[in-house]
View 1 (cartoon, one colour):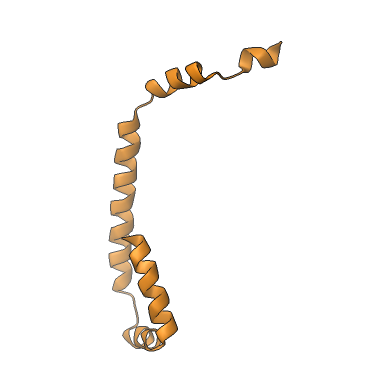
View 2 (view 1 turned 90 degrees about the vertical axis):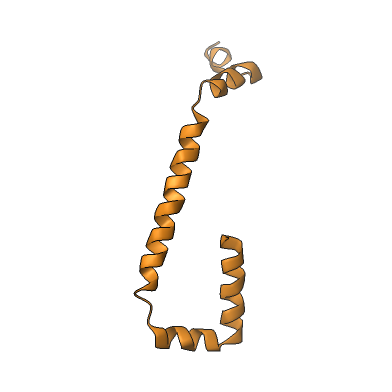
Length: 73
């Protein structure tokens, strides 16, 4: 009997979703992505150019980094 009372129906779930503030989630995601971009740019200042040159000299690593960069766009 208790399980029947707690059962979620399609209608009750849709009613729940209508009450949610989805725009707040969108704003949060946008702010987080901006924060991550800023942190990434700050991290570029800390990259050792010689080490980066060694990594990019390896064709496999260059291809891996390129594919990773494409997925992050």
